[in-house]
Image (cartoon, rainbow, N blue to C red):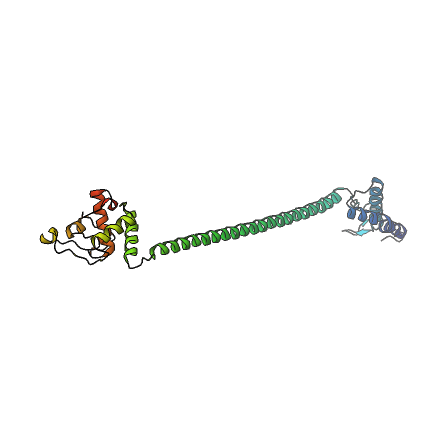
Length: 267
């Protein structure tokens, strides 16, 4: 280094002060806030950087013992301050905010969808419960109706007749109505009293039928061939059975005389 060379310490200090106190804080603030530096501040930063680079340039030893002065030293690259990095930072912040907004919207959409699904599920369960209750009520009503029908059928099936002439005639009349056989209580009672005096085991052993081997039997004195021919289904095949004897005799009288009511003598 030449004896008369003086290191420019005052210029270096001045450049550093400019960069530290003025240019760099403002440039850093501009980068943080995402705005571009004014043209004047760009010039200050660039000038201060250039001055600092020139001031710290020192003679450098070169090959062969030569020296390089400040004028010969390679110029320092100027500090470039532009709006491009700031725009890039601002774009990242905007993208982050936009992404956050999309996530918030997605969360809200999912919450709304979950709420709609829950409401639909509640409504579906309520409808299913209502349908189940309606089905139970319907089944209960059907059971009540069937029970009533069974009671009615049992009442009809359990109908009882007294085991006497009155009961025999009434039971015969019910059977005759089912088979459309005409006859009345008075007509049947009148003919029974004339034929057998109400004795279900009465038998005629002296008339022409008896002489022919087929005596008349029962309440209405029916011969066996006639009883067999005009027997009514649902009654006994025993000719001495009071109900079977009355019903078969009335069926025979209906075919021959129109009704037992029209019979006033031996028939």
